[in-house]
Length: 178
Image 1 (cartoon, rainbow, N blue to C red):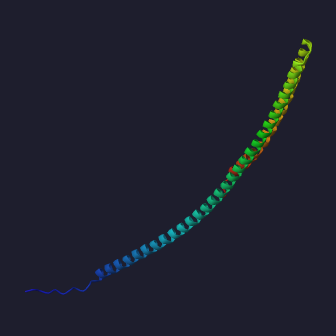
Image 2: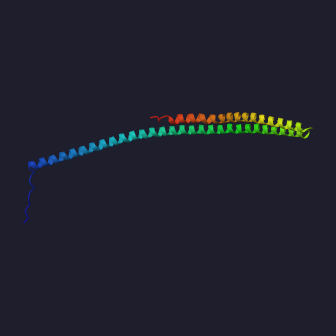
Image 3: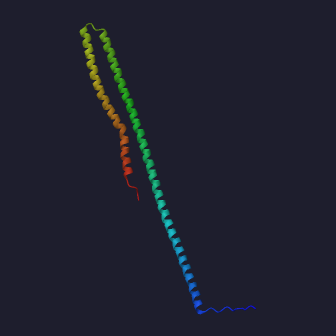
């Protein structure tokens, strides 16, 4: 035979324990929920601040990139301008040297003809001496003139580059905007 046992009614200490367990569970769930909400809020704030900083940095980098592109473009333009000035100067120097060489050759031919028609050895020596002296004086004068011309051309050709170096150093020396 089986005996059926009746459930005993909950005693006061058991009920107090169960009630405390329920309250503890509710408190833990409340803490967990509050912690999750706070973590989500903190994460959202952090993500928002990070997004703002990334956007600000991206904007600054794009601005810097545009400034560097403009700087490099101006530097290339200065290089081209400098090359153009140097080329024109080289053409001018070539014309001057060619003109001097032609004048020197013409003087040499004239002197040669005069030497062939000379009547005496003294006249030959005088003609040759005058030619050498005049040629040397012309050479020294032309060398000095060509040196001055070369210096002027080099100065003019380097001026655009010098100006760009100053601008570039000034630009690259600036601190990045905060």
